[in-house]
Length: 429
Image (cartoon, rainbow, N blue to C red):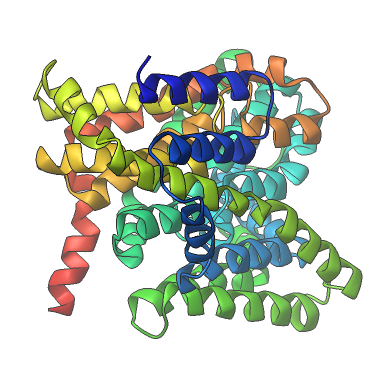
């Protein structure tokens, strides 16, 4: 049996046995080092190097800022704005959930965090409005995944570090696809809600309540304007923007809305520590990624796929199918670190822009948030709604289809991701 086959068998066996992913990757990496007689110090060196890049600090800061904005009152005001904007129509509360998740995604950078922040308010509201609970939870889980596509995005930061791609360009590239997927999710929500007769009670849209809600939530709306405007205006880097976001959330929550207490700040810090603890995956996965070069895996993959087809659209579809399958049992962070080094050389050789491939990768990861058994967003939605993941998994299928349609649109229309970065770059020049 070849060394690669041995490593594959060991990794799959450890994963099936339920060994934590970081340990499974770490043990497989250690075995790989032994098989090709490389000192184990590579693991230590990679571990140290993986946690030293300054942009990595952006992830816990954005998670903390998003949590502070949630508990400090900004999330509720965004939901109020979305509610008054949509009005009372069939499926209106579901549409509000999607729209509010889109707004909050511009603050949190995380799919599960967006699901928790918006779903904790909108799922009970949809229950009161007569929605089937699995459907309400599915809307929240699928819309919450927008937190990883609409900037700032933690997954884009990881991809940018691994692929050495400009993070501001990735952020800009995610805006139009994020809006496109939002529209697809809203269409899906409306069609199902209309067929089942959900919602439609309450007051229709009128300018007075909407303008009042917008005025009350002006500080909440100001957050993404400050963060993204500061990045693209050249006022600060993404990491500095994350620090500004934390300060802004503390100031608004404590002194403007006056809903932020010391206990809530401590809870937010604890939540941040738990959510960013997944960064422990960086050390073994980056070391394993480096080993793929020793085993010449990228070349083997490139030769294997191009022997089947050299059509760039078919290659991207094959990679998308692979990513969706892997996402059912692998954390998105590990998926990006492990496979970017394998597939990026292949797609760039076929003329695919690394920025476009980054957005494509994030969309496939979002589908992974919605597929069991791992499904991070499904887990959060199940906890909020009080029902099993299995019931939500069935209800979320139409929304997974919406994401797949979005992925296919990106493959055939890559300019959707590249228009804003290229336009902004042209302006800067």
